[in-house]
Length: 509
Image 1 (tube, rainbow, N blue to C red):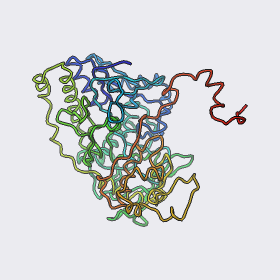
Image 2 (cartoon, rainbow, N blue to C red; image 1 turned 135 degrees about the vertical axis):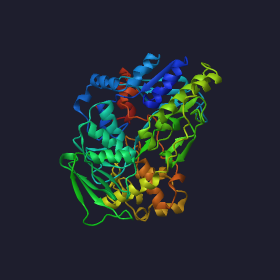
Image 3 (cartoon, one colour; image 1 turned 90 degrees about the horizontal axis):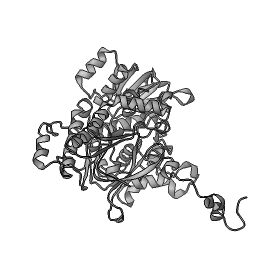
Image 4 (cartoon, rainbow, N blue to C red; image 1 turned 180 degrees about the vertical axis):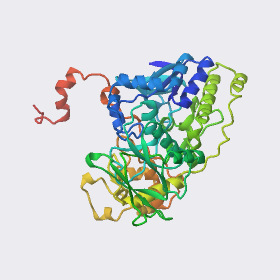
C-alpha cells in the first residue's frame, strides 16, 4: 500500500492553494481530484446535479482530460511546484482507527479511477472537496434539463460541454446572478432569474449588469411546473406567491426554456470529514453541517484539515475566490509545519500576507431555503417528488408511508405521520429514511437531504438545527463493482456457485 506525507482532496481554488503552499515549504504532496468524472456518473447527477445537459463529446475520456487540464491552470502551477497531481481519481472512503476499528495500519483513503480502486495511507490530509448543489422539489424536477448551479458551472468552465440553449434560473443571490452571467457569456440565453423572496438578494452591481443585458427578474415568484415531451424540459411555468408562499391565482407565466437551473444555495461536501469522525456543527450561515476548525483550518481530528467550500460556504465566496484560496493556503502552511518542513516562526511569516478570515459576516440561509421549499410544494402540490431516486413524494414523506412497490397497507399505517411520530420521541431524519426509503438512492441523499430535514422540522415543530444529519456510508461515490473488486471470479466460484445458493435437489442446470 502506498503512503503519502500529505494528501489534498480537491483541485479547486482551496485545494490547489493548499497543495502549492505545502509543496513550496518542502512537503511531498499528492493532489487528488475526481474530474473528469465519467459521462455515466454525470448521467446519474453525481457528484453534481448536471441535469443531462451534457455534450456527447464528453463520452470521450481523452477529450474530457484535455479540457479539464486546459481549464484548471492552477493544477499546472501545482505540478510545477512539485505536487503529484492525480486527476480523474476520486476518493470513495476515508478510514481511521476508532472505537469501532482498531486494526488499521494508520489512516487511509479509498481511491479509484476508471480502471481500479486502491487504498493509500497518509500522514496529513486536507479536505477541500467543495460544495454540492442544493436540491429542491417541483413538478418536472425529474426531467432532463433540471440542473444545479455547480453542475452548470462545471459544464461551462471545466468541461466546455453545456448544451443548454435557454435557461430559467432559480435564486437571485450571488450564486444565481453569477450563474446567469456565466450562462450569457457562454452563449446561453437567460429567460428569467426567479426568487421566492420579495427582493433580489445578490450584488446590486451584478443585478444592474444583468438588467443591461436584458435579463428579467421575477421576485415573489416560484416554479409551478416544468414540462416537456420525451422526458425533457421544454417550458417552465412560473406563478406569483403571496406573503404566505401560496400561489396567486391567475398569475401564471409560461417561458420557453430547455433548462431550469437551481441556484438557491450550495451545501458543503463534508462526507469524508464525517467518516473520519471530525466534529461537525450546524451553522446555517455556512450552509448546514460544517467541520469545527481552528484559525489554521485544523479539524478536531489529528492531522486532518478542511478548506474552501467544504469548510463552509456562503454567498460572498461566489464573488471573492480569495476567501477559499486563503483558507487553502493556511491549511497548507499548517500541514507543512506539523510535518516539520518549517518551524512555527516561518509558518507565521508565510501566513502574514493572508488577510483575516473573519472580515465577511455571512447570514443564515435556511429561512430563505424554507421559503423556496414551501412555495414549490404549495405550487406543485403534495405529489412532487422529494426524493427523485426512490420517487418518494412530499405527501408520502409527511405520511411516513412505505415504498409504493411494497403494496403494503394497514389501518395502523394509515394513522401514522410525522406529527404522530413526534409522540414517540425526538424526530430523526434517519427514522424517516428507514420508514420511507427517502435518501437511499444512488445519490445517497445529495439531492434531498436538506429538503427532507426542512420538511421533517416543519411538520414536527422542530428547529432544523436540532435534527441530526441523514446518514450515508462508503462508497460516497457510486462505483462499478468491477472497480471496487477488480478481480475475476475463480473457476471454483464460476462452476460451483449454484450449490451455495440453492438447497440440495434445487440446483439450476
